[in-house]
Image (cartoon, rainbow, N blue to C red; front, side):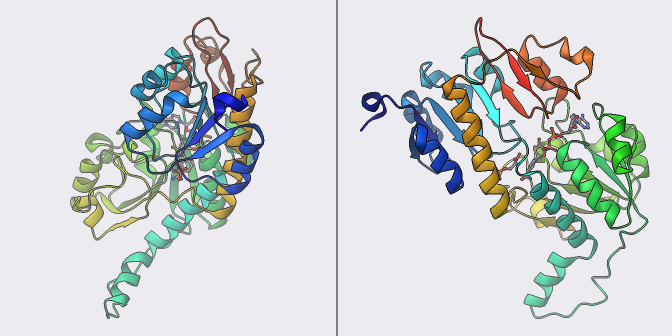
Length: 362
Ligand SMILES: NC(=O)C1=CN([C@@H]2O[C@H](COP(=O)(O)OP(=O)(O)OC[C@H]3O[C@@H](n4cnc5c(N)ncnc54)[C@H](O)[C@@H]3O)[C@@H](O)[C@H]2O)C=CC1
Ligand SMILES: O=C(O)C(=O)COP(=O)(O)O
């Protein structure tokens, strides 16, 4: 039976979602799992959908909202980063945007640690070398982590969990985050420092801020020049926070000794990119959230948020933002400015027109 006939809403799921989340959605809606849609196919389908659930691989552009003809009520991002959703267009079209803020935190932090340790000990490079029939013990002498300074850039959920784990490895951890409360840093035993100080003191830098207009290419020629020579960089945040051409230059100049990257400004990155081919760069294909446990959790978290939004339960005026500085809270209108300023939305609810604006932050 079609959605129109049975009265149930239609939810389009455009990327793989865990079974438990799909089951929750199916109790309430007709669920259309159509993976690998081209932008044109997505635009064509969207006019019959009340909700759209995506991961990082689907770009929810202004065109998607325009093509929906006003039917689309909620976009659910099954994960944290909402940089692939045009928030301004969502707001203008009265469409809620919700994410799954907590279920993949540990997975992303664990992946950051995996990249940090494997980079320091050349695990990927020496594995490739052995598979090519070589035994290069001298070539792959690594560096130790204990006693080294790690700068965590973005001390939110993932950054905090990564910091805890790095301290367990005996690292000295500092963090830079313009919005992080000092008591959270104290609780983890981490010192909050300014941006330039973090760059100047770190032996390792791990990136955990969202991609926003402020963080776009925040690591660039100028900021690489402020780093300690021989720094090592881990990125499980977003490729766009690094100017990738500048990173290649910094690697070649010896400023950056190694980098380990899970995310890229264009995904997948071109095979012939200098970054992809660089001997001192370790790569994973955006796997930070990809554990069995995280994906089941994310699927449930987003299904609950999307069903709540479709039922109209997520439209109260309550603002639950204990960690948000008061001066930022006064900027609730327009909502998108808040998103941009804070760069740390957990669940974002946007009601367009004269509707209520509700925000719940973690
Ligand atoms: N590789 C992967 O699969 C995954 C990637 N991510 C990425 O990691 C990011 C962080 O995730 P969470 O920790 O869950 O988000 P979060 O919202 O808890 O933390 C982000 C932190 O960045 C801080 N921040 C904002 N602007 C900043 C700036 N200019 N400089 C330094 N810090 C700044 C915020 O104040 C906040 O504390 C996400 O936005 C997403 O892009 C998240 C999960 C998985
Ligand atoms: O949660 C995030 O922000 C992520 O980057 C995870 O992306 P994914 O859902 O694995 O495409």
